[in-house]
Length: 363
Ligand code: PMP
Image (cartoon, rainbow, N blue to C red):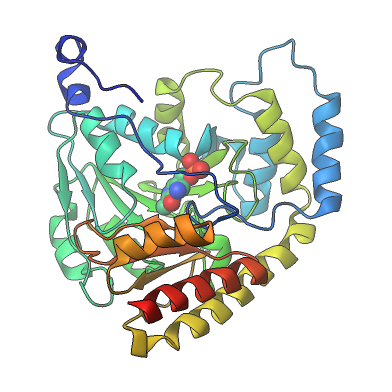
């Protein structure tokens, strides 16, 4: 992508002028384990149902702005009202809208890095000051005491569970304690919760008007390309998010695909179980490479964080010599020499491990 020339930068909003275009660092490869997608895709019968629904939906009309049908079915599943649900063009858009609605000067965002990089990016675009309570550098556990001590000063506090890129879970009881300690909002980002053996904070929505839960169809539901996420929250908070959103940001094709997939949850569950099973096997394989200097953290998501010698070089060689793409966090603060690896199919995982072993043995 072209550089932003100084003459263009001079015209930009100051908070945007400091930014560079987002680079997902994607290279075409045979095995893509870099973006935490669902490597299995939808089961054939579900894909057929999605295709059928897409074939029938009219596209000459604008979409239902609030995705009424999908919203109602999601709400019913969680035992909530449709007014508790808002859909977005991926979870990303909803995070952005949260900062748009509740951000700006004096509206602090508090989060627990290392976590999802877009929080800081969107906070800065919304001109919200952003503060960090760093996770334990060895275990990546949240420092709840420190977080509770600062939560009252924040307009939005973010707890990511399971956390990206570390895979770490957060205890819902700690989330409740946070919500009780502030008049601000507590955003619980559960993008990967379907892969975890932990109760969702969705059940807290009816009791805590300041808790928001973010979910997505991009991971477990294998619809990253459709761009559909949703937030569960108090109706008042949902209305604030509805006020700032672009009315037609979620297209009819995405709404239709998501609805068809949502109605086939039982048929998708075996794929989720398989990913969890493969995560365990990949964790074991990588744990056995301790003599080559590999450390791997337990994960409740569909990816694993690993630390290994010369991670940046290993990542490049995996890509160039083995056609396997993983995500490089080796120069990110708190993640020295770390790579994030999406759990793939057994064949993909084997190719990854064989690649790592051959590269590290040579070194
Ligand atoms: N939250 C977390 C923690 C994520 O990792 C992601 C995707 N990488 C999202 C939210 C947003 O996902 P999407 O926009 O695809 O729904």
